Image 1 (tube, helix red, strand yellow):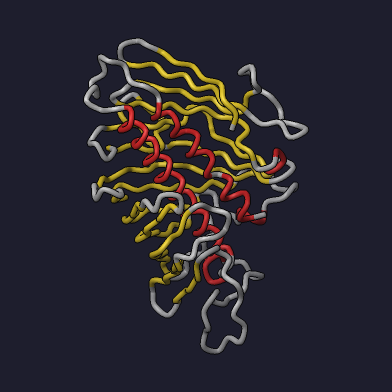
Image 2 (cartoon, one colour):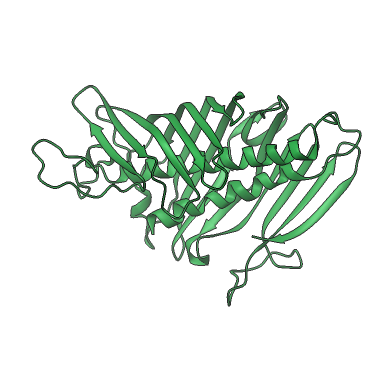
Length: 329
């Protein structure tokens, strides 16, 4: 269940980034960009957002299984996937396609997720490289205000076309409220809130182009007939608030993504994205996307009998042209 709900969050970024693919107006400032360029831009946004979220999902899973990090008395103090001196049992890694090690011998503890490049886990990609988490001695992830540093040196190859992206750079990951996400239950009365910030995530695209993106996200975990995860943006730029991502794409054009209503995933609805709204602004124009709708574009409860949710996408170009789509997800 843990892995399923965390990987389900990938759909949030994937669907939001579809906003890039809308056709541009002839008078847009990016008129030199072809439709193929816009599709590439969409693909880049999707992959970077998906893989960043998936990486932090893995960090949560890895730390949850380490007593010296979480502070949980029932979490086993072993290394996963590798032998440990003085420990007889080597347990299966909690992270798919990786081993997890932890070194607590120094003042700064280090937890490392090492990906083997074998793929699997039902995901159409392979990962190589590492995620390195550094934790000051005495800091326990379940404690209020606990803060760690997460460094990426990760290459992701998509199986369908062998295209790669590489993510490097450091992030600050904070357990704002304290608490263990996987301990939430029907008796839990307050959400657990995590934040992720980064000003130097370097992305190397398959053509060798490198760009730096910024991230400012909040994850709020609660329980209502199962886990509920709400994603929001925390950055403000001028008069624009709720920004979750900003930077430049491989073509050098800037973009900003805001989350106007929290993007919410519910276990009770089959781990589906049940509501939320985002707006993406770039040189092409603005696009809003609303989730958790029925086929007519109205808000709905959990789909039944195999039905699906729909989203409504409204694109407005700089010349005033607009496009509206209602599509399933």
